[in-house]
Image 1 (cartoon, rainbow, N blue to C red):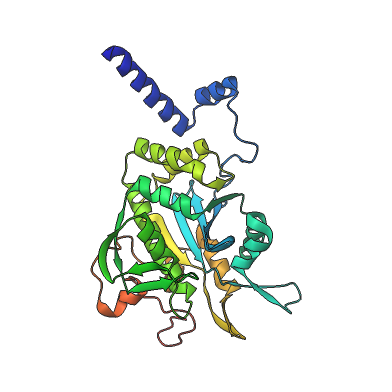
Image 2 (cartoon, rainbow, N blue to C red):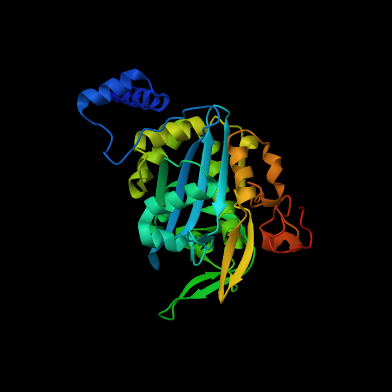
Amino acid sequence: MLGGIGYGIYSGVSYAYRAIVGTTEVTETVADNGNKQDANTVSVEQKGLDKPLYILVVGTDDNNPSQGDSLFLLSVNLDQKTMDVIGIPSNSKIDNRDQTDATMLNGIYEKGGIELTKAVIEDMFHISIPYYVVVDQNAFKKTNDVLGDQQIYVEQPMEHVDAEGNKDIDLRRGYQTLDSNNALAYLRYSDPKHDTFTRVQRQERFLKLWVDQEHNAFFLTNAWHIWRIWDHFDSNISTLDAIKLVYNASKINKEEIHFYILPGEKELVGDMTYWKVNPTEAQRLVGITMGNLPANEMTQFVSAPTNSTAKVAPESEHNGGTITKPTEPGDESGSKR
């Protein structure tokens, strides 16, 4: 009996390993069994040294499920062994073709879902984005449950009362371990001025904890995590391709994993605050993802360090403890341009 159990474990581990490294034996086995990828998924492959895998990640809020409130462009260059994560403020200004009217980026998702949002961001960066992942609140909580509660420094008191008068966000300032509900509250919170720039900073701080944790984990642990959570996402990447992608990404050195925020500045239109994207700087970001420019070309918009539990000086706490302490665009004092 023990021998049979041992053989079963060995067979399962061997199959998982072959699946992750992508051997033809697994491909043929899957084909023979008729377990083909879902019709909505596309094959994940890098087609050139300067053509990284671009993946659009959109987070939705249950209060406004038709809006994309968190947006990230993930670039994985397996050939050059680099990964770049670009946070895109949800209030980014999207002008119509004759520039007579403007829409916030989160409203684009409401109008046309992931496909229209993907098309707009493709126009913004002048690239093709073949892949996407949409994460709702339940999917986020499931992911955090699987990966485990995270310890982080909450840089300020955060409170919010919903439309029904219930306090749905109530976080104190200081170091603490956030369960799934409080982690979601930390990511959803918007400053009284509805400052999406600082919210993107917080979201990237939290995302770095996940990336760092999975980067240090054994590859079968990563595969098990992806297997448990991927069905909760809306994505055109299959579970097997997601496992293979995470496996290959785990080979990237931490020093080659960079986080940015889409360059721009605040613009007040009527009573609405937009994030006016700087198209020239956006193209420089694209150059970094392709390996044409060094990562330090964008130091002004580099986000917080991976170690978000490190002690930070009081004057930098509101900025999330950034290494370069980038100035928020629109604040002319201290600008590096």
